[in-house]
Length: 154
Length: 73
Image (tube, rainbow over all chains, first blue to last red; front, side, top):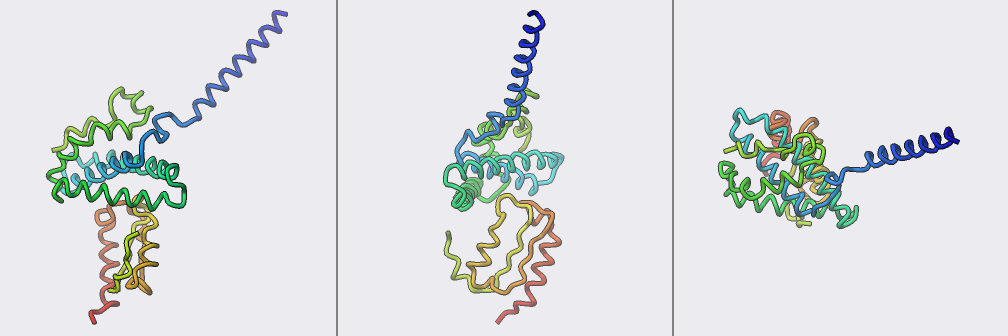
């Protein structure tokens, strides 16, 4: 009887662990598309502009390019996935491109086609874009936004 | 999509093979721009979004090859 109880307990524990493992395979909530296409594209363009600013003025901070590139690519991937949800596979790329062109034009105008004015964009987008493109894992590991170094530019 | 049918001048596409932003856009240019017909379009490997910086030499080579094959009328 006691052995049988232990067996049941063991089965329950295995079932519980299996459920945990399966839950771990699910995309983390922060990795799924919780934001709009507009938000992802805005942040992707924002990071693209930061990279452009670094490339136009090489410095010791040039190693940040890879970090921003990673952020840009992540925002693009999430934005494309969100676009497919929003418009379907057939129109997603076209709509994404239009959104990109619109945002890019807006930001270029905002800095007067002059990367030395990149601070304007940072003041406007840095905090929200850091949050939007940060992964739950990175937040868990560091306890801080992924890109505290954003403030170092300028 | 923007109407590109008025672009009748010689037109070359030289896209990166690894740009997540513009991936696939060369096909639209090549099919919609009259001046892109029968050109020696190139896809430059190993570059990302910043093609000029990533593979500037390859891009210049493509542009230099394009010019003599499309002399001014």
